[in-house]
Image (cartoon, rainbow, N blue to C red; front, side):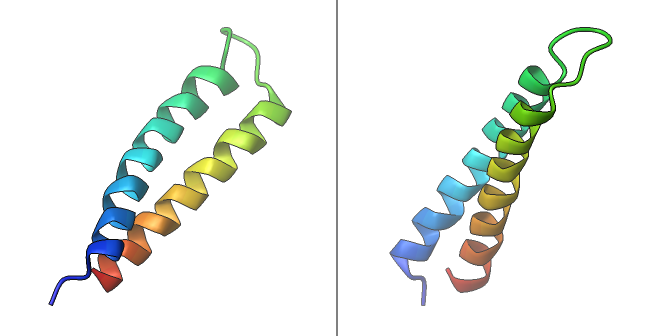
Length: 61
């Protein structure tokens, strides 16, 4: 039986993971020879959070 709450968590986690990964790439590597450490920690944390939400949603949906 599918649980709607976990299914929503799965969908939000998946799209959050995709968008956070794109944000990480675009914001952390802003120029050809530059890497922003503080910005990458924020976006990297979002990538990990949304990936974990997606994974837990898939396990429990």
